[in-house]
Length: 273
Picture 1 (cartoon, rainbow, N blue to C red):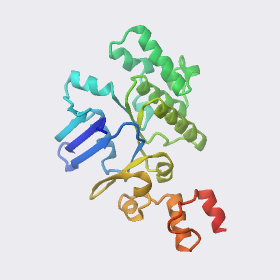
Picture 2: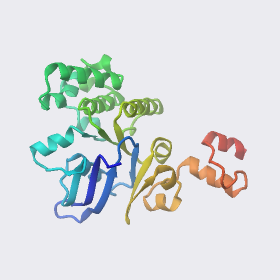
Picture 3: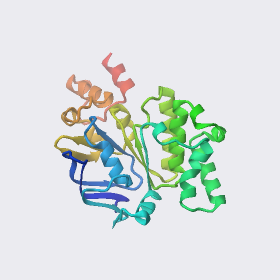
Picture 4: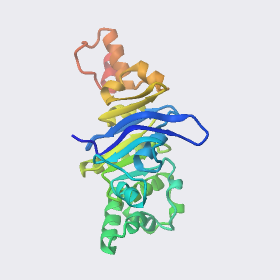
């Protein structure tokens, strides 16, 4: 299957600084849940901004459906109709007086007819479960509500790919679970979701694929495989997830056969007792 979005030999360096990314080949496949992991400063934010058109590769190219993206008005409009980035802090994204006005901004800028804009806004608010907040001033929202409103603004663009920078950061456990339910619904509706996070446990249970950014480069592969590699995680400044760690411990103590599937964490802890 051809990738939806692709970086081919891409590199980027900020002004008067060393290269943050160099020679990067990176693909986002349709229908896969992809997680990005790495220490602060590893290049995750730069990678996401390159993929969403916020930055232009200093070398190499960004491709959408196999065609190189031109970083002019027409090219970026085409890209942003397919790829949307939601930044970590919702206050960096929300700017309109009310939730409805903020969510409608993107579709209106596409020049869509008013009925289609209303339909997209209604659908996005419903998907994020914030319909009751449509007239609420954005500055009166809770942090979790602001997160949802920011995501709704991206969803209203009907993107094929939704990229989220630390979407669960700052949310309590209930808020995190509710957001993950929302993302599951978006995936069922056909949106490919990419998430940057430092939470390896979340990544293990959520993602199909993982991209781990290390000083040696980007390792890409099945999440279950990459996130069970303690050396790789250590090189990326990450802690090992509970489930693979407990599975390895049980196997080392002879409590789980080498070819048996790893148990879920509660089952593993019960067996260890």
